[in-house]
Image 1 (cartoon, rainbow, N blue to C red):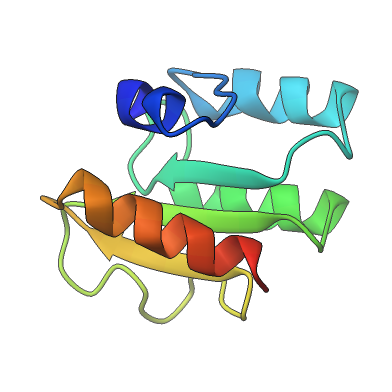
Image 2 (cartoon, rainbow, N blue to C red):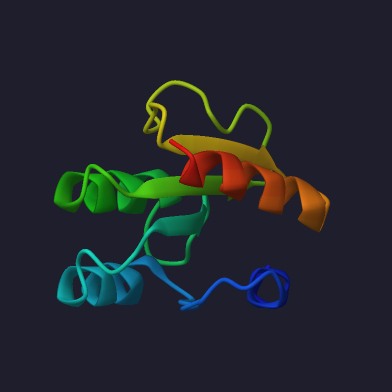
Length: 104
């Protein structure tokens, strides 16, 4: 995903776990436009990270990706600024959803 996003012109910060991402987000709040999060992170659930990010910046856009079915179900963040993408997916599908999110 990182190389696909970079080739598409996005500036990308990659984190391997939720806590480092949340720390960086908190320090650079207002500089992120969109967060692409996996539902399963080593140190926390992706939906927990998404909700914490949304609590700090309700205007940020979030794309949640998951290999599990029904990822956008009950208990997950929702709204016009949150989208879900089922793995496996084509890079073009991810980019299309990101472009839609940036229009919201």
